[in-house]
Length: 173
Image 1 (cartoon, one colour):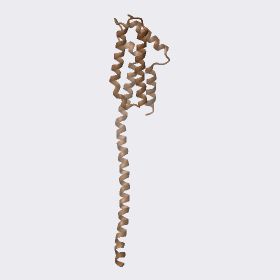
Image 2 (tube, rainbow, N blue to C red):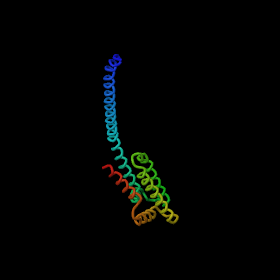
Image 3 (cartoon, rainbow, N blue to C red):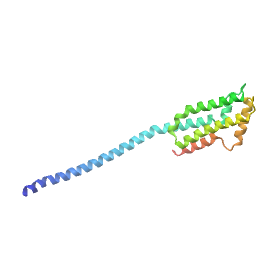
Image 4 (cartoon, helix red, strand yellow):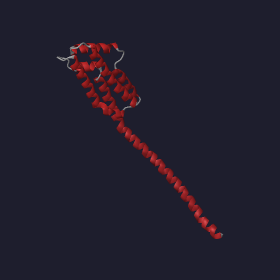
């Protein structure tokens, strides 16, 4: 029995030291892991935030470029029929959209849906204008009717989307 007490005298303190060391090391490792995780997250934010801001800039430029006023001012109307001008407008919008489609990964789903909706509603406005014109109308007549229709609306699809985009960007600052 004394031998058992002698063995316990050495083993019991050793076990206490072992479990104390194990607990302290484990908590230290968990703490270091949390710190590294926060550092990685911070580094990712430092890389992603500028990319997000660039995406918002590009999308705001896209919305400005597909606004009805901008489209009419940028595209040449001389010697074109209304149908040719309509096709030019639609091609310009689709080209701008395809050029910026990759930016959707940097904005919220709701924001991207509003931007896509702005594009679709602008296309609908163009098609509605073209359908309202008599056959053989020229691009100048199309432009006049299109801008008049746009002016009658309280807000253009691009303006609505741009306002939403601005609100979303303000959440970061």
